[in-house]
Length: 395
Length: 229
Image (cartoon, rainbow over all chains, first blue to last red; front, side):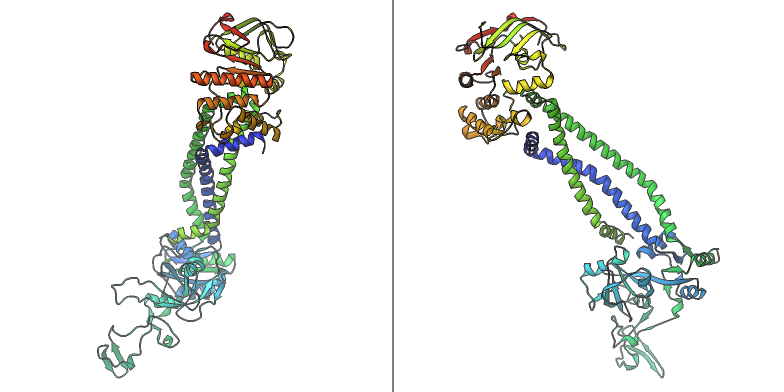
């Protein structure tokens, strides 16, 4: 280390608190705007990427943002009005492959998404452990849910009760974990996937209970006639689907009238997409067809108008912090005027004096830059996780 | 005060005036022999410090000649003048002017840290330790100036001035901030060190009690022309 650098090192070490404060101030001035910019860009690209990978969404008329965000992120419940017969209608049209979505419930805070096996193929999802669901009552966990709840295939996960006071309402279902999805840094990591029929069972549209013909308890039996048995609510309902009781599970009503909360459509080609869109135009239909990419872009155009104010705010704060730092440096130089004069008397050139001060600032700036870089890198490393948490908390 | 041969400082018809506040210093003729101890007397503002700055080549006279150690420093370019100062002039200040963030040893070595013209090596470091020992600071090499008394600080400043083995030692009121006992100690220390290194000592003071032992005394009241410093 040469002479001036030794002096700089001694100075910075001696004034370690001042140096640390300067380093932290510059680090924050660099870190905040850069990281916010990168996070927003990352957030935007993730939102856009998932929206662009989802060609069409069909759902009940109403708030299009709610519908798109529900179908993409399984949050924000859309208005009801979509039923299973729409799947058959679209399938029979031959224009697109429909993938039903039914997301009304949660299991220990994570959304339960009832869908068909085609959903995994459509999203290119694979399992790292176990397999996809094959029977009623099975569930496939998103990577983050499995990690958070420490569940592996073979474990059980109970759906959350929606209303503890409504005994005639839906019962929680204890689902068997059959597989864990590979992590893909999307909303799929935060969801619990079940077959759509399992989801309807959680809703109470289907159930399994003890065989009423075998019940002898008079407190349970209300009426027993030839070919007809009427039982009370005390009849034991199964809260878990097992090989022994699976045959007792049944649905009341027409399956094609059962509700969906969204429908992803994968059109065969561009022409099919246009033809399909035409079917949902006009006032005679209660459904709407949306292109998620357009909706998300529209949302961004609204958000980014507001973001400009925040950007301006961040830049103004950065400028004012920079000016404050310049003031601190100038005042510090003024305080050190005698020191510089002494050095000059001792033969130090003005160039070396400037070099000393430039070195001090340079080292502080480099340290700040390194710290800001490490922090930004760390932030961006965990950004997908934080962004997912942000979405998970969005209601 | 004129002395034939061995003249280290020679001034003829020197005329210097500050541009900012108009203070003017005129010295008709002064010659100082090498190895002598010179006291410079005079009230505040009479140009004593200006005289030292002129000798060090920090200021350049507008007229006249100023020869230091055989070199007309007014004729030197900035870099050469600085190199001249680095190699031949040692400075001791009234306020010590030590750097708080350096320990005693590093303060003594400061001229070698800030001048690329001076070559730092193990011998220089040994010299610094020896000087510190000679001025009575052998056990305080790692201490910082804030931990030292005024007298000790001035000893460090003297060691710093001597580290470059100067031909001329310029002491600008080095005893101004010291108690009477320390004043005599510091003066004697400067005498001793100047004698050891055969350096010429120019010692500014307005304390008449310190004048004993000097080879010559220059009274600056005679040179002031006007303005204020």
